[in-house]
Every structure is written in structure tokens, then in C-alpha cells.
Image (cartoon, rainbow, N blue to C red; front, side, top):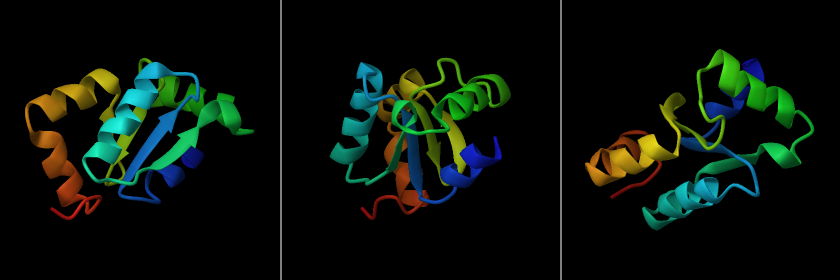
Length: 103
């Protein structure tokens, strides 16, 4: 779990994904559309990916484990949470507050 927390705090916006996950792709595309350049960690392409996915699911409560989105070093949620935040207008402000975007 320390590895996940370290990676999650290295950039203003961080997304843990799997390369074959369509919802992961959707969340990444949304962040890019909003002007953010999140750090992307594809767990299926990482040698410690299975352990990190287990930590996300079991120790941090991410269900499903991916996509797992962190903004400003804090866990925000998975795809449904991010889409809800975008629809109600708070996602953009969260990204601005974390300095992931500047407008």
C-alpha cells in the first residue's frame, strides 16, 4: 500500500488503470479533455501491478480496483464517482484546486 500512496502523491492527478479496461480509457480521456495530464499507472504492465491492485481493492476500498483516481494525493473514486463529479461540476474545480489544470 505504501507504493500506491507514494505513486498517488507524485503528481496532482494520478489514475491507476488496466490497459484493457474501457472505463479506464473513458476516465483518462475525460481528464485529457479537461486539460489535465495525469500520471497513468497501468497495473497489468507493472511488475508490482497485482500487489498494487490488491492494495487498492482490499486496503483502500476501491471496488472495482480500477480505475482508481487520486487528486491532490487523495483517493477520489472510480469511474462512476469521477463521472458523477464531472456531471455536477465539481471535478474541474478539484483539478484546479490540486493544480492539475490552470483554468
